[in-house]
Image 1 (cartoon, rainbow, N blue to C red):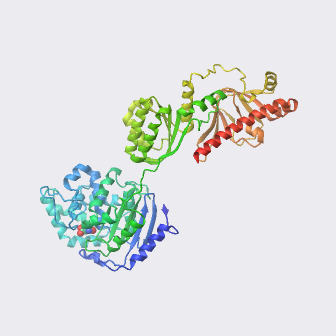
Image 2: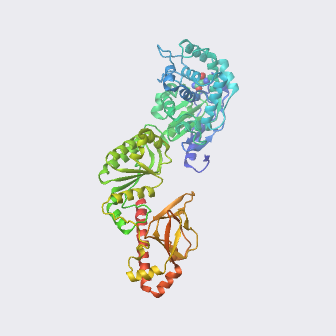
Image 3: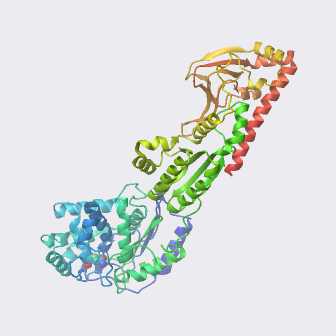
Length: 614
Ligand code: GLN
């Protein structure tokens, strides 16, 4: 749990707000429920919780009070989960009333309460909660609200008793609902459950967490537990937006601009979807039944922290972190000079898009447009999703359309690092079914994605020479400058060693006395990353050299080399190299020159990639 208690400017600001408004004496504590009249008008707490779980609290943020009407949107959400939108709509409408919360007004004709935030609509919602008995219903309500709050909640029996003893108006509403067939049987047990739900004891901190759970699309950001299915969060929030502040909902939306709900005990929650939730508690109420200090806090907070829902910065910052081609970037496969030259010439046909952040409709639209505009010069597309945090359904749809268009145009698409994006996987499987493999392929990382693109690009070029059966001792790339006599001398100082597929040829950390010339087969150079995964630094085939660095600087091996296939190596020990150099300085110089060239080529490539990443 990220508990932030000092030095954050957010904390400082909330403390200032609290100090600024604590002295306000306007408003009166609700008295129509006798037990609520006992509230101290000085109680005052604020709690702000971000959608990633940072909790800021000031004042009486841990003081218990009853949730009252703030329970209504949460119970409405439970009704939606239980019956679905269509069924719930038959019993409760969606329109603000402009009347007080306890008005006895039902829709003409249907008898439906106008919305779930007035008592009539809330009592109807309570009746729709799962549970055969009132006790069972209450248990369900407590369980769900506890998930929202991130800790166990219970009712306050004295407030419940107090309201039950005096709540005749709500009973009258119950009988009206029974009369219109919104409730199907004795309304009294439902009204009692409603009283109990209103008497659930919470703190300001609970309210902040409950609001933040709505901001986080139904998952409590501190406990990580889901309290409501994500698809219903928008319904709960839109009702809070239009009806949450009783008959002051219009003014609230105009000035504060966040879906909210207030309760007669003095609590107010507000939600900035995707960002944060806030709970404020101060018992004195204005004539509409909303906490006076609460409204002041929200007015100030909304302005100072830019929380108004209709004053959002553009979310369409670029989702393209990096755009490069197969000329700028290559896979870690070491290739002979001829292939390297081909890739330098034709690598532009491979295009790499590294995406980042949250892919929504607006961010993905820009990505898709950019890629389609580059179609002409592209034959291969690598979509790197490693830094994508989330995808919306509409982002999946746009990517899906893009893949279809790319396929139609004969482009090959490789998506890398997509395993953390389960929605995308499900979406593509649902849309493409068995066609999937035809339309795009996936790769665990960019290295493998690029290698696949390079291989198929090289194979598509008519000029590629077919290596055929490799000679038993190929012309090693490092020996390019040696004349045939020198080469014969060089070969005489090698010794042949064989390895089976899967065998470790050398291990990181080992002392090093020899370098390897790969005569046959394939090897991978790998390191172990901090997370324990293996990362491939290079993959090599016949003619290549490895293990040379350690021979140059004498340091232990920096990486591990594994035989991917059965492998034959020619080994040159440091001692032999020394001997060779003493007898044939010319050969040694030529070898070292090639070695220097190959190292500088690798350094240049690394620099180029680093430059792109900046
Ligand atoms: N239990 C209270 C009632 O029905 C809730 C009202 C409220 O918080 N506005 O009267």
